Length: 225
Image 1 (cartoon, rainbow, N blue to C red):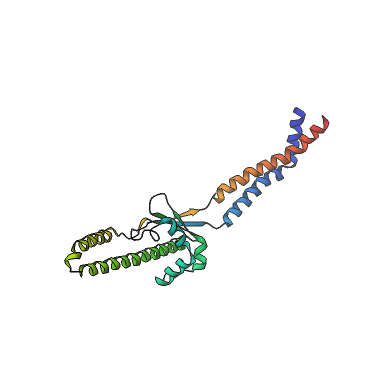
Image 2 (cartoon, helix red, strand yellow; image 1 turned 120 degrees about the vertical axis):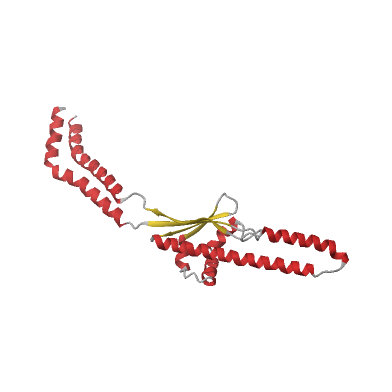
């Protein structure tokens, strides 16, 4: 055992510079590689869909697909002058229907903090503007029907008129626009920091140095036996 320990110490002295350099080099390489990876950012927001249509624009699962479509993105971009490059935005934009009834989560991934926030704010603006237009159309439609019914003056239609007007008024009062439940926030997706990667690289370097030091000696011992 003493002989084995002496050989290890002698080999360590001969390879001292190499054994010390390996952890330093692996740590430096890991730090450099980690620092070259650009940080990515994810902007998120949540919208509660309104109550003005039963089957389409207020259905989270339907809106999840529709809001991400090129057709919809081009429409809100042109209608509300958002100034977005739809071709670049679409692959970075995603929508999820949350467990909370009527809520969709919007997220946008980018390589710049402010740009990611700005793009998602514009998308939220476009979606809410579109919702406002649809609810105003619905209000106008109900108001027009109410005026038409109110114009009926025959006694025979009086009871039915009051019933229809009541139902339309209830529908009108129940209309609710979409609104933001969670404002846009931005999170950084860095993974391990360059320092953390450097520490890991250093540990890997120590393991490599240990293998270089010990394996040849252990193999010789094995051959002797």
